[in-house]
Amino acid sequence: MPEVRVDEVRRFMVDSLLAAGAPESEAKAHADLLLYADTVGHFSHGLNRLELYVNDIKGGMTHPERKPVVLKESPATAWVDGMDTLGATAANFCMDLAIKKAKECGVGWVAAKRTNHFGMAGYWAMKAEKEGLIGLAFTNSAPIMIPTRSKESACGTNPLALAAPALKGDSLLVDMATTTAAMGKIEMQIHKNEPIPEGWALGPDNKVTTDAQLAFDTAKLLPLGGLEKTSGHKGYCLNTMVEIFCSGLSGSNPTFKVPGWSFSQDVAPDLGQCFAAIDPGCFAPGFAQRVAECLMHWRNLEPIDPSLPVLAPGDKERNNREATLKKGTITYPQGQIDSYYRMAKKIGIKPLTVV
Image (cartoon, rainbow, N blue to C red; front, side):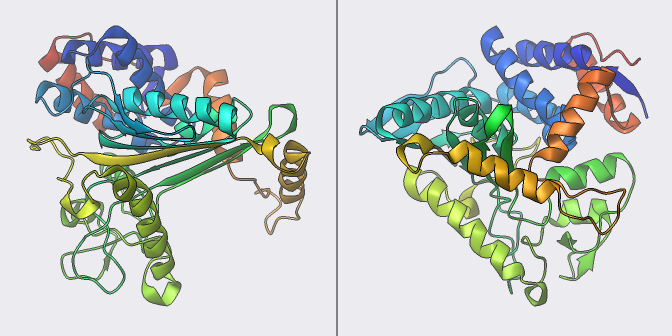
């Protein structure tokens, strides 16, 4: 598959967002968000999403020139109107506010309405972790998951993320959809012309399918855990927890009222998002030491397969990023390169240069 230099990918992302109408500062911030996803190996949330962001701006659903507004706040909480800005713009604003409040009060909890897709939830949780805080991030999304026993999609992928600092720059990072897989991962299988694993999605007959295109068209992702017999109801319950934090607190659209994210979308999604930061220094001394001990214990467990060591949450992404940055290039499916060549010509920017 084609390879593209990391700095060239970022150049292309920034140029695309600038051409669509984003201010330079916001284009760069959003490009950093997308590029991070590709460097850690979560290709569903990186370049794969760029054209949708461009389409949202050009179609008037996203207003990258706007700034979020605080509607109500207390010393430890805030309710924010995201003003339909770019995902990174609103998320940076909200997490910065949560961090500020956590440093002053021990905890900061911010809920926002009128937001757009904010990429990897873990990216925002890590923003607090880098300040020595526990970070949390949540968002709702369009209805593409079927609640347990339902024939209809009514829930989003509704991801949740937590990042916690340990000693010597180490950290724990939990970042996951509450579906078996994000829709973007199904899109990547389409780009690669490969099937999806059994248990990710149902087809129109409400039976499990491995056809990636059929799964995408039907939009019936299974909750984390899959079917009820394999405890999919637990993923469904986690999904609803995220919903309460997001639309419940912010007054945004609940997932079942969010329009599908597509090139034909003509109204803003009004997503609900939630960001929190907690100062562990307000609790028992030695937090970072205890997290470090847990991380090392898990990593030193004897693996079933000696070639596949036990990892702590976040290790795989950290390892992928180090390897990618050392290599200096990112590998993309040819179909994705071709698609972005067409977009580049359409919006009048230099196409991606393949190594």
